[in-house]
Image (tube, rainbow over all chains, first blue to last red; front, side, top):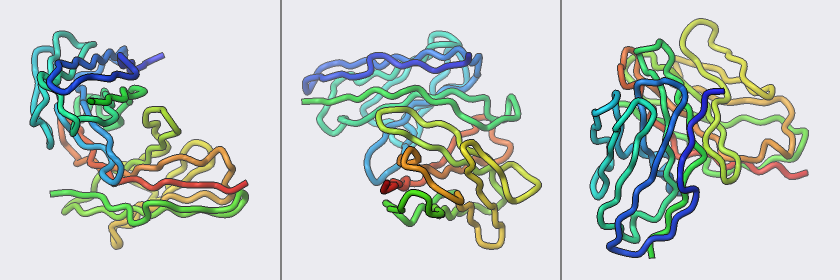
Amino acid sequence: EAAVTQSPRNKVAVTGGKVTLSCNQTNNHNNMYWYRQDTGHGLRLIHYSYGAGSTEKGDIPDGYKASRPSQENFSLILELATPSQTSVYFCASGDGDWGGSYEQYFGPGTRLTVL
Amino acid sequence: AQSVTQPDARVTVSEGASLQLRCKYSYSATPYLFWYVQYPRQGLQLLLKYYSGDPVVQGVNSFEAEFSKSNSSFHLQKASVHWSDSAVYFCALSRRGSALGRLHFGAGTQLIVIP
């Protein structure tokens, strides 16, 4: 069964520390996405990728970096974590126009708290 | 530019009652439209989607939605809700022909079903 998994599921970090959130998909989708979810804002796009080796900025990229070392894996990196980055982060995969289906498949989320 | 508006942050209904969750979109052409559901502490799951054709689309768990081009709307409906339908519901839009297939989300509507 196709799936998107995320690790860790919960993370507590200290201000100024480095945080890496990992995502793995078995859907063989070209595109992967990182979102954050905050009350009143829905999901906002942080970074996305068209395939291995590519990363692009989304709507709110400041303070975040991304890495796509392979088709299956997509990481979100907070080099210097701040309390404002406390949120729930979702990874998703999809094929956009490549596969004719615009559905995205979401992971279970990572709850990050920065103290 | 495109955007999605869900005017109701929270909706409370009694079990067995009918339900409508509202979604309005702004986009110059006909978009692809989606409804996703998020149960507590879980990722988003696709309920239904509209690409073209019959404006009334059926989804999982007896949900349906009606696309209206004239009203720029895609309201979600259910004839009789169950307590297990309590969740957050997101309406989303994607532009046709987009290789990325990115989704633009509304802020979400929290549905509370009173047993």
